[in-house]
Length: 282
Ligand SMILES: Cc1cc2nc3c(=O)[nH]c(=O)nc-3n(C[C@H](O)[C@H](O)[C@H](O)COP(=O)(O)OP(=O)(O)OC[C@H]3O[C@@H](n4cnc5c(N)ncnc54)[C@H](O)[C@@H]3O)c2cc1C
Image (cartoon, rainbow, N blue to C red):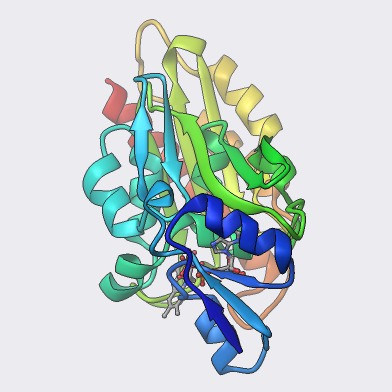
């Protein structure tokens, strides 16, 4: 196996153009597991961790651009105020060791329906930045993820960054797992309030082939909340919101949980995250 470790993004893009089959390696917390279990046998690996451009983030106050190589640990430490939903989700990923190595860029690269970094990207209108020697393009995250572990990335492209709206209101993320830590989500919900737009964004993770935006639930709750007065959300409204978020799930039965349980749990998480976020706004 050939391993290349470019020092700059330009070198990495040249290397990927010359050898499109080369597998990018960021933190390696997915890729090394795949190699160790013989699910992946790449002839060549492109180690991206020495590239400074991929480890940078910047914000103009309205949006935040995060390099694909920023680790979960850094996201939690440095971006908790600007991107609270993504930071909360990052805290649930693996263990400190995994969070020290793992990146949202890698989570996007794997595009697992259970990727905890993905739903907060949907609720904050994220775009994924893809670069090659041919140029750079930005793709909305919902178009980037095309199916379970499938993306629209071309063989010569690398994920260089993602950008998303900075929080303008409370955000939440909650996941159900079979234990408290080091666990793949049975299901998850990401929720963001955008009070100026009188909008709630909700996305379900690990209960369908890709993260799923709960459009009908979003429309219902935007009209049901007391945006001016801030009255507590009524139990009937919470129940209906949970029902509608649960209805958007397209879960399967697998070793982690049954489809019926997932639909129920998604509804519970939706009610919980909405209540937490609404109370934090008051
Ligand atoms: C013990 C353990 C616990 C875990 N717990 C969780 C969890 O709770 N939640 C969760 O979501 N995940 C979890 N994971 C999975 C993993 O940590 C995450 O998916 C992580 O985000 C992967 O990031 P990485 O930087 O390590 O990616 P890598 O393993 O380096 O790469 C992952 C994939 O993305 C591709 N890739 C990486 N960077 C780029 C790039 N810049 N451009 C193009 N393609 C790229 C790689 O080729 C590979 O296909 C866990 C893994 C382990 C081993």
